[in-house]
Image (tube, rainbow, N blue to C red; front, side, top):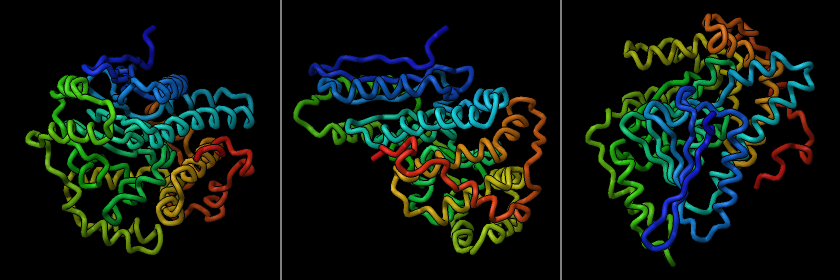
Length: 372
C-alpha cells in the first residue's frame, strides 16, 4: 500500500533545499485520515530545525483535488463501533487534536510554506490551505466549508478565518450554506494572493530552485517568484462581488431567524445562489446555530483559542449532535435523507446550543492547552 503522505526534497542551485509534502490519496480526494497528521507534523518539525531547508511546498497527487476534507466517514464508522461514550470521546478528541495541531503548526511556521490550491479545497483541506503563508489558487480551484451538510460545523480554524474576511456578511453566508467559490472569489476574500495557472506547477519549483536564499528574507523571495507567475487570463470571473449588497444586509440582522428569512426570501434564480440556499435549508439546524454563534460571539478570539473552542465543539457535536447521522446519510448509506435531531432552526432549544459550547475539560487539561 502506498503511503498516504509523500515527502521529498529538491536541491537548489545555491546549496539549499526545498521540502515538498504531497497528500497521496487521490481516489479519496486526499481525505485526511488520522494517521496523516503525525506524519506531516513530524516532517515539519524536522525541516523547521534544518537551516539548509529554505521553504516548503504543500500539494497533492492527481488533478481533481488538493484536499476534499477530513475522513469523516472513517471517523463516523469508528464512533458507531465504539463501546461507549467514553471511547467515543477519546476517538473524536484524538482525531481533531491531531488535525488542529497540524493546522496551528502551519499558521505559525517560521519558514515559507507554499500551498498549491488546485481543484477541490474543502473542509479540512481549507484548514491546511489557510495555515500556509503563501496560498496559490489555480483556475480549477473550488473552495467551500460544507460542514452543514453532514451536521458538523466550520472548524479547522474557520472561527478565525471566516471572522477575518475583508467583506461583511460573507463568512456568515459561506458557513451557513456551504457555498462553493472559485479562485478569483478567493482573491476577493484575501484567502489567496496568487492566481497561477495549473500548467505552471513545474515552473514554480524550478524558479524556487534558482533562488539565492542565503542571507535574505525567504518570505520576500517567495513573494517575488509567485508574483511574477500570476496570470488570471484563463480564470473564471469572481461571483461574490455581485452579491455584496445582499451580504451586507445579512451582516446587519439581529438573529439567526432573521438571517434565514433573508436568505429564503432573496429573489434570485442564479444557480449558484439557489444551490447554496438549498444546502442551508436541507442542512443540520444545529450546525446553523453553531456557525451563527461562531461568527457573532467568538470573533474576538485568538487563533489558538479558536482551535480550543472548536475542539470542544467537535467532541460535543460528534457525541450529542447531528454528525453521525449526517455522515451516515451523505457518505455511508447515501440515502440523502438525514434525520436531524431538530426539524428546523426554530425548533432547536437555546439550552442545547449552550451545551454544545461547553468544554469537556478544565482549561489546564484541555488537549490544546499548550497552543501559543
